[in-house]
Length: 428
Image (cartoon, rainbow, N blue to C red; front, side):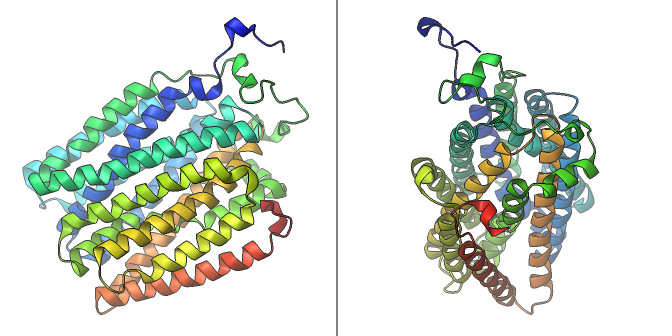
């Protein structure tokens, strides 16, 4: 492929993806307003932390099904089209939910839970679509994918940070019924941004990064099996290649940060006695992630995955014990440390996995990838529900959760010790 003349330089992948990063910011802002309001709404309508956690588990399972559906839909359409369509659909569903809650309050818990479940089914489709964008615009180029992922994660975490704090301020000045309308409005802005993403990467975009498109030998092999949109085929491809298998397996164990919505709501409502404080705890998940994405972008080229994993294990240990004093500011600091270090490990392993996807059938493989990660998410939330249901008090539930997180931190330290050559696949 010939390079474009200097005065006609083709846009890089990063330049062409500004609508994707903008839409990501707005969608995460809306998602994290929802992560503040949804568990509080469910606590009001379901009547207990255990019921809320179990409904959130069903929400996670719906999200998991959506990721598989997204993998199949990506074999029929581009991620840009799916991002636009399903973000508009979420706007409509959440508008219906806000109207229902405004008119009836806590009188229809089944209808409220059903709308949340439908929303998360669509969120699963969007999740798979987002994670196939980097490989669509920079197939097989791990350096370019790292750059795209770093920029994406920064936009993601800025939205994650602003959303909860915005919800917290609004909850101090208006009722929950009014704050519920914020998410659908912001999702509409996100949908308009996603509509501006190119539906396919122009050939010139493959020159992004070093100025050269990856040679055929440098790109993941286009296995003939991968072109078939079959979950069974995707499963075989995921586990046949060590470079795909090992980062994927480790990623499954890094999903503990997803406890944020229920954890923050129960901590604020039952330990601190003020449900509006949950916004500040959730907001620190975003602030920590934003710092982590910036630091990863600066240091990833000279830091081994095993080092990132050790750091995330230590951050997890700090978080596991931070709830004990029952202090808001200590918990906010611990959340920031935990999420910052967790982002290090997730970005390193996620970029490695995306760069290893075959050019044909990558969507269905990523759909299965995200599906199993969402199952891991459901297991985490289900465990939280059991911990609170089987404990005599909220503190007993937090004790059980802390013990599990400390065990997981130790497991990560052991796995990191086995990554002797500094690469993710060394542990396999």
